[in-house]
Length: 403
Image (spheres, rainbow, N blue to C red):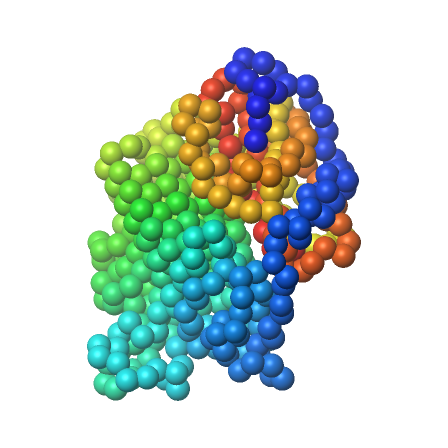
């Protein structure tokens, strides 16, 4: 990560990284040297019948490709990539065929994710459906629970109708959401769409919504306890309650929309106020929730694809600058006094890709070409850094699995 070139009150030399195929090639060429061999497991017609069958034989770093179809919930305790072959064609939904004897049974539809320390589980283009079932005379509700390790959701949809569970619950874990939709529905009480406890959340281009048809005051769009959230270009909706509720948590959001209840604020907090920059709060402005310094946002127009240009749009102050770094691994690293937010990519092995200038609207565009022949499923992550005084501001990490 940056050193002397980014010290306080020193303007760095500007260098345009577009297009820097050599830097990207060096980064990705070095990655296989530190990664285990990758096996591919195919799930669906002609392959393994269920995702859980592939997980039973998968090793860290393996790729599980899922053909179109509907599959039962699963449990993951290994760092692999599980990806739909075609986006929008894979549903994870409760199937009574795979429900064994249980008492009580209401929790038997949960998809449980807990990769071990040092491994990352990546889910790409999967849809976790809201359907609940009745089994042995009991309601069985869906939910996605991350209870440890690091999990990445890319292009995923999580829709849950439940009387008990959040749509997505993250406890004692790190999660990155990218181009995802998380919705929590309950017709009687209302639930939280994203619930966190002792968790680190980063998110880009994601929608998180809570809904209750009778106007319940239970639950939130995002409910956080002892957690961090670093996000850009999010849409958070609490329906009849706050879109964002925090308790002893740190939040940095840019370029986002937060919708709360009629006549109320979209944000509720205990302890540290969230920091919001270039955000819209509906139905009426409230706050202010001013950041300590202008925050750095980022957009990813499309996923990285082998052999094609890959662009990122950074959002900062007009005519500002962004230094861009990359790595093949995510991390959560706190460096108080140097960076305002936790680092989202691993500092060890981080690769400087250059400095890009923002235009008069504050948009800095950086483009690289992903080398042809790069292994599908291999990951590459980017993070921007800006600021002339300490602590510096970082964007959320962005990038993902190569298509």
